[in-house]
Amino acid sequence: MADGEARTFSLSVVTPEGAAYEGEAERLVVPGASGEIGVLARHAPLVAMLKAGEIRIRSGGEWQSFAAGPGYFKVQRDRAIVLVDDAVRAEEIDVEQARREVEEARALLERAESGEEGVDRWQAEQRLRHAENKIAVSGR
Image: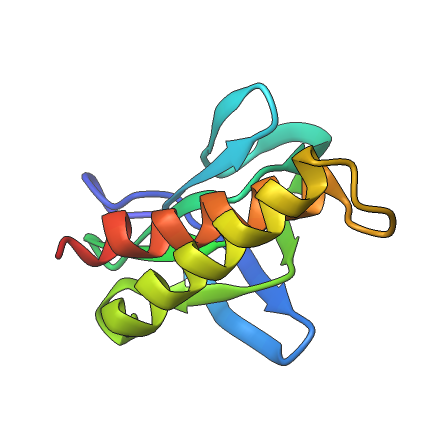
């Protein structure tokens, strides 16, 4: 490893539709259930639950951002796997669609709060957080 060259680790960000990111990373920041979790190469083994939020990946000296839904995260030495229900690159976010998703999630949350049977409050909250996060991550 040359002086000034960052150590990397293998990273996969996977959704039900397939890999949103696959490659080497210098750093990773994920939205843990109790706060952000930062990862560098040779991180201690870890399994954590993730909430909807922003995933940030530093690779090749550049940062990439993803708006992600809830999921799970696993690190083993020089390998990290992020399993989330959705991950959208910041530059690919459709802001108008995200705004519609916010309205739909708010309506679903209202139904959950009114005690409607079969509506999961936690899922509704996560959908709302993810939709709002898309707008924030897009920067618009």
